[in-house]
Length: 167
Image 1 (cartoon, rainbow, N blue to C red):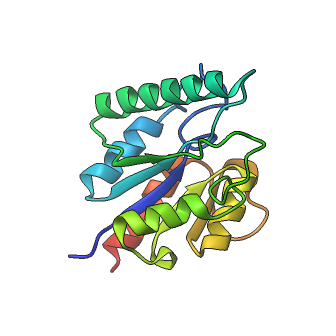
Image 2: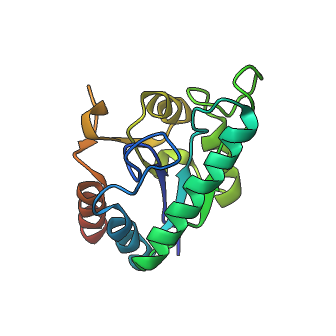
Image 3: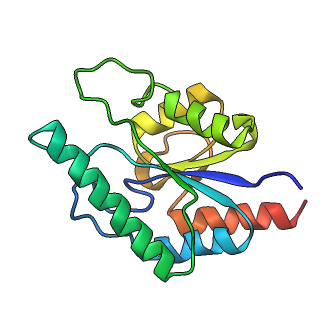
């Protein structure tokens, strides 16, 4: 059986904002649990939150991952892997969106072609990176100017599971 993988952005898809105190958006943990129960592996891209120092940003990143894991687990879901660019803002790298490196890391880990992988994202830089990587992009929320769009993660999961049932 082929791997069923979904890539989710964090800000605007799972969490309400970029700060470390962000809480999951209403319905997001339950929607992610539905993906888990349907047999999907879930990779989450977590952006480095704005902070006064790189060390504080890394601490905040850890807090965001902890909050997400706790909430998703409580809802019965699983995040199979978190991916983040941990380079400093002034450090050149290929993994900070809009570069496509994080998506390529996901593809390498799962050994998949990204054209077959849906990526539900809200942040403009992540959307650009997903397009550059060749993902099957779905914009979440108000971010969509063109292409596939869903109002929130729950609507994305509904559409994905409906598509899967029709195959």
